[in-house]
Length: 315
Ligand SMILES: Cc1cc2nc3c(=O)[nH]c(=O)nc-3n(C[C@H](O)[C@H](O)[C@H](O)COP(=O)(O)OP(=O)(O)OC[C@H]3O[C@@H](n4cnc5c(N)ncnc54)[C@H](O)[C@@H]3O)c2cc1C
Ligand code: SF4
Image (cartoon, rainbow, N blue to C red):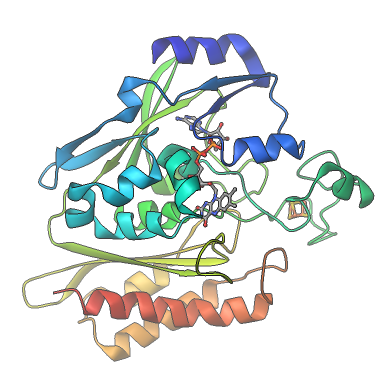
């Protein structure tokens, strides 16, 4: 691991880590990302382990593949929301290559950016790469490309922590604090920092669920993802609640208002409806992914409701 960190430091700004390459290599073919040096992290032993248990929480190495996550007994039994969200990512073949680390650091997506070089040249490029205008919001100085990972909203909702290493040492980051609401600088992370592992918290009575909106159920990126998390007391009163929306803005949206409406109450139909309305109000998708954006906003209400109903059905 220390060797990989040193290699990327030596490569400077033109170096980039690669894991499964299912995001980075297509981006390189389209000349969206153009590193001169790539350092593979697939065979680093420290990044390929799953350890711990549900009482102390588990650590998942950043290079663990999505298939291994889907199939791991401990994750399936104690963190079913993580296995379920991973199972919705792309296709079985891509899940054999794609890793949890690559998924959490996925590039943001936009209809005007995820195109080949000639297509992008045809519109004179855009702010995110090689151009000076945003075609989605031409008056904007900011890029609105969308955070499109299925595991990101789940990790934020359950309160996971991420460990990074570089030649300057290690640091631990709350998943919620990693993402920046800007489609270009979408991570609070330096390029030379290696994601080592992800710590899932102990399962001390919390429940979580994930719902994903996409056109084709077999393989498509989320154009809306809703992760719901609650922890309730013995009598069913909610003590902690988090609703997190993915797939509609450059960073995941933690709908604090929805959590506030749920805390102190039971998970009944009335409070689920109120929380879903809060998610609808907060969701402001733009016209840069699949489906009409107004409809995706409507779906934020419906999918939040469904995610909460899933929680209500977990014993
Ligand atoms: C057709 C298709 C469909 C897809 N559908 C979905 C989908 O439905 N949902 C979804 O979430 N994703 C989807 N993806 C995206 C991708 O396959 C997955 O997100 C996958 O998990 C990415 O992991 P990877 O290991 O291949 O990442 P890579 O391509 O190797 O890396 C992605 C990014 O992470 C960085 N990186 C990787 N590992 C580290 C590390 N340890 N430390 C620091 N930086 C690192 C790389 O530098 C790069 O910037 C799809 C991709 C394709 C091609
Ligand atoms: S949101 Fe705008 S700047 Fe960002 S990728 Fe799309 S068109 Fe380009």
